[in-house]
Amino acid sequence: MAAWLVRRLAASIAIVWAVVTLTFVIVHLAHGSPCGQSDGRPVAPETCAALIRRFGLDRPIGIQYVKYLGALLRGDLGESLALHRPVADALAEALPNTFTLTLTALVIDFALGLALGVYQAARERRFGDIALGNAALFVNSMPTFWLGLVLLLLLAQWLRLFPVGGLRDLVLCPRMDSLPCLADFAWHLTLPALTLGLVGAAGTARYQRAALLEVVRQDFVRTARAKGLPERRVLLVHALRNALLPLVTLFGLTFPFLLTGAVLVETVFAWPGMGRLAVTAILQRDYPVVTAAALIASVMVVLGNLLADVLYGVADPRIRVRAT
Image (tube, rainbow, N blue to C red; front, side, top):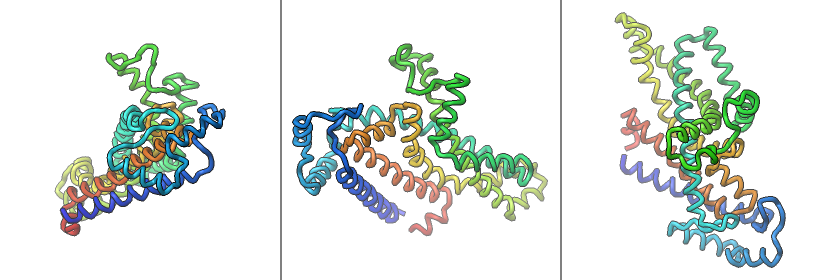
């Protein structure tokens, strides 16, 4: 198991390095320059030239890449060209908001998806199963940003049940140091988290339904029924426990997917997270921020895959035996 884990860690580091390298090359070769304002107005040529010299953007891309890798190995993510501050500081402000959004969406995803999957499996081929299956397929096929716009229009603009965007009410709650301000933060969090969570729950429900239906046809489930156990106990205790193994793998893969999927959701709901920061940096040709965002996203994807493999090995001893 230890040797397998070392090999996976080495492969993960190689993947992260490849993603960072590819992102660095693409953003530097892309058309345009970082000399621009957020409103689209160009910067004076002499100011642009000074900015390019200051950040070493006039050097060959190979030299820039070696310099960037050296700084990265020291833990230095560079300085933002547009924000004029260290990239690490900008990410330190944005990442907690993104993680809060992603973790909340993850809870909605698996709690709702698991419940729907069990309900559909218990009513296989009945009206409830067919109706929920079609609804889940419809939601799962919708782009995340489109579902966000629909919820924003319906629940925020028309019904006015939720705010249209932002992290909190900055006038009433400049700091989250009271219970009403925490409630206001949760109120602002609901729509973006629901957007991410609903799309994930639709897929999770389909996975869980298929896994549970496969398990209920096995011999040990028929034995439990033959002993006279209630159907609810057979389904929720004996069958569900063994049907959760595929969900373990899905859990490890869903978190990085939600993290990267938050890019569009944060833009739609004006949520000040890493996704919105990355989109703004792309539009402004802010190379250090774009590369750092790609680095964080690739690390999370790799860690999610590694966590899924480890959890699956813990849940199923046969996997550990094969891994060794």
